[in-house]
Image (cartoon, rainbow, N blue to C red; front, side, top):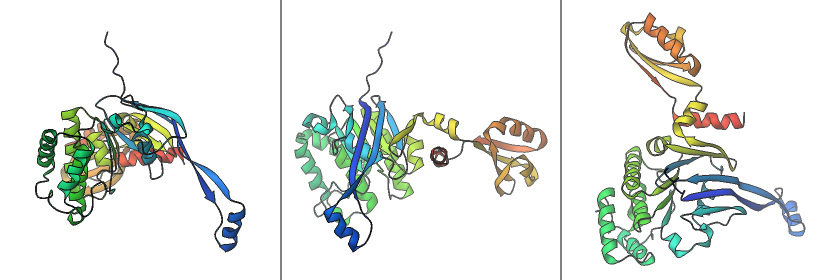
Length: 328
């Protein structure tokens, strides 16, 4: 009998609330607020609970304002929760113990940790001192990261002279020099071109595979999620809506499938389903999931088919459906 693997991230009823001032616009309201200040409580995260096993890569999905970044900030120790509990690698994150900080990292897209006016290599060397790396460790890890991320020509440039894509590569390298066991990645590919997004996704996958690091990733780019995350957690208005396999999410919330049919003569297939596009002999149809088997069999019987593919809808459409079912 095998023992269950202990999770490295555990959240139990984690909640974060803010008290914010409330007043109407205008001078009269501003003067009134000096005498009698009104406030309201905003719950950014509401009793969130989940666990992540060692080495997992988990997508943390939700619209803007859903509570993703607030959750990551609590897990990385930047915020104290209002209530609830969390343990990461056995530590309580907001105590910010040195041993914990040396084993995790937080990367936030388009947020600087590199010093703006000095060469990249000097910021890296500052991190070497902060994390108390020996020069041998530092040099070996820097060489690895330089090769993997193609940083050679960037190391001696001031950060202000880097493009967004170049800077994000350097930000990722700076965050990984101490070889963390937990990666909290908040929109790491935000604003990057398609080629750079693909390279960073490949790098994150390789880092996870080679080091066994655990990754919790937020992204609005569904290609990131599909490429990296077998499991996803969906959060909306601070509450968990779904936690499970990406394939299960698609299965539960995808109401239709897409049929791509290559037929001789480009026959009109509109009687079989909604025609999404037609290009010569290739027709793309949208079919109800419940009818897919029947319609596919009918097309193969009725039509001279060269090729036929059945695919799930894009994951971003599935996520939209999750949110629309919560707020119809």
